[in-house]
Length: 351
Image (cartoon, rainbow, N blue to C red; front, side, top):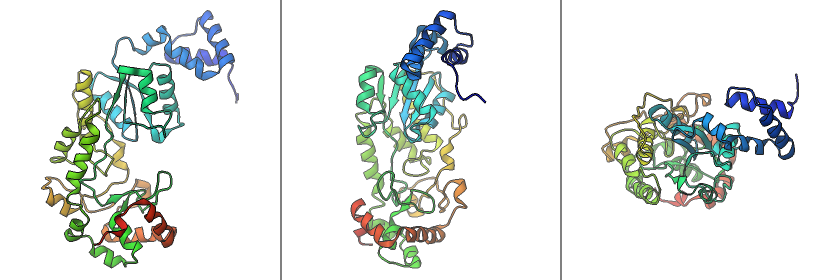
């Protein structure tokens, strides 16, 4: 098997893959020389920026969008592709940094061939995706959109530890505040189980989390170019919009896509049945019955905790507590206590 391709073969592959024809002699010679002199990334950017390639890709005929975000971004892109006349050509999911699709999206952005860019806010801790950098490149073709994060349905769910060093429960990075608190106080599994009731939720502020989180979402949403917080919150009163605090269901993504369609004047009709939402296979957190009743929600979930399909069967509350204690034992009680002092004040709240 050959270990490499010549510059000419590389350029031929680009022409055939994108234009569906062989490269002409002049183009082949020019791009092959540039490839040798400046490397493949420059050649790809130059080809993407040419008028011929723009026409072949349809950039002169269609509304092209690029979406930058987290794990929700690829699913939102599929929803837009299925229900509108937008061409979502590029998607950069921050969780897929370094993978081909991510690198291709960045190359298109840097070549100024990304169409209109829709992004959740990114700071300088993500220099390649930073809002300041990409807005400077795209100006009025850059649009900010709020990242979905709402704790009103799942106020007991928490991350524990910093990004890249989070403590795992049996279903992944999602932990129960109550279970963590009980474990770190040395309470038994049975005593922990007894804490799951309305009195505890009231003391921990779980019933007021809805309004607190809704106001925070509206605050983050107000300065955005594409706003959808009010529509999302109204939908959440009637339909389940989240599997967890930041993984939207298909109906939530439809609500977000409708906001984008209005902003861009797209011809659109979205349906939850027209695209696949892989977040359904990620970890899922139940809506506690007392939370549902307090907010008079017309929908409910099973009171079971579920990780990815490879993580094993879903667990009822007692099994989840026992499995969480086993996970925390592996970290060590004192190590978790030290992390708790740096992480949050919920450990010290009185039940």
